[in-house]
Image (cartoon, rainbow, N blue to C red; front, side, top):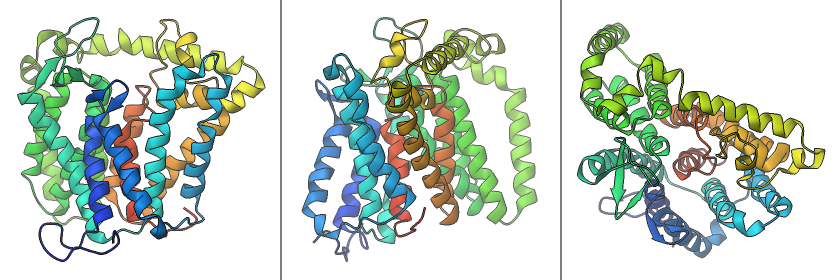
Length: 391
């Protein structure tokens, strides 16, 4: 039932399971939208996807690959931090969120999908970025819980995302538009990219801006290798870059003054950027001086808040993974990411490759190792490269 391709209509060539995955991929942008305490819209759709997958369990194929082994191992390793916590109940929510993301990615690697399924998956993740742009102008809200700032994110019924994580919703769309702009000579894609970057600037996220810039330049670099009229594009992009630099103050003037200040040199070298490096030192120093057992299996969910100078998380997902899950979890986590990168490279999935690398840039500035849009890109990459054993 779920393997049969549909023959008519918009989803011709898709399988019902592929459509279900595409809907989930899109829904990951709404992980901030609370349906009930501890239950987000994305988490709810993820659970529905698991139920649909169970109905199609006979089609599961567990191949012998680094990706499959790493995903399976990470699901097991994720339990260990609960065992060292004084109050494991405090880690259940984060544990469940992590397990759900990893399990869905594992299923994406283990089910058969049609080429059309992969296409609608790409469309879903691209649409995620476009819809977030629309919502930013139609349902915006100032960032703040204990405080209120001029930084803007989407606000739906009082639910809003952290501005740094919010910028992650745009990474796949930026990669997609940049790659196909040069590959297919679709110059108008840069208008869409410009709108996205304006939305990123409104959030005031410097890490988000850097990550989206990385997505664009990596996608452009890949497309240049495959495109015609390379010199024409190089000249046009050089002119556009110079134009942007010359008019940078004009662009910043379009933002609230407090937001624009975050992108000035004096702000970038100090303030919260300096706090992040201080937190990294605290966490790594604590990890190095901890017991060998804790270095191996981790210190527990949210444990970094006990050792940072300001009582906050590490603001670096790789450091957060190392401290939370220990060496075992860190190796599994990195193996999953490296496997996704290698599969994207060998299977010619340039948009996935640019997105994964851009997410790594973003994750270096915040603690969001279970960030669903990142796992959604990995899931799409594994959907498209199923059967590539050894990777």
